[in-house]
Image (cartoon, rainbow, N blue to C red; front, side, top):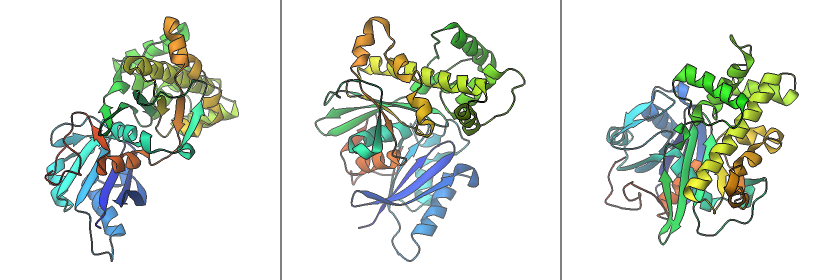
Length: 335
């Protein structure tokens, strides 16, 4: 059986794999900065993994960090842009499906096992069949949701990372004002993402800001406890994430649980466990009790989007507003 190409394209890294008989294999992670575009990165990957096999994929599914619609794909936090039909032709693919990366993560949720998750805070049991929320900071802030239907699972993509950021105290209000002065609009992503963590640190540390200047450097400085601005930035980052996750859970009625994805939170470890995330998640006045029943998990599976694309390929996962999945033999290259 010929494998299907799957790829998860973020602002920093691209993850490639081949799906055969429902399983993802031959996974490679490359830096997007090392390639001029998606087609070049995918072609290089296929050249490496298909040597000697004689069989290259004839179908592909891609998860991209940005809104999807029409033939032209543009990443929100990376200069890559490509046409779906032209890329399919360049790679020799008869069919190519492109979906939002967090829609792919949402489709992964029903396929994750206990070893792929870590519980955060309290909450009751998830309500079977209820909507599920997915949110996660990485290069940007991804947001999606997924609901069960009679055909499997339906992911509902969105751009919730760009909602307006709201503070809950005077310190947060001052930081938001600085972000607003700097960017014009203080969105959730300006604070709750890798670059957002640096934005928070710079707003707290003064102008010009001293090192550190990368997300990893900020979290490392916070972990050793020698940089008060770094420690405050990480605490504020987690608090803002809690507020945004609680807003999302209220908006969609996420009694099925809230799943935190992305590359940053799993690396925070104890800093996140001790953070105000859960307290801020439930801090919604009259609806605190409602949110207190909703469980939250951190997704520790680094290939969640590829797992979700597997759900798209086997016909058990669909994306609202998108054409039928690759299980439709009449489908052509499309976005």
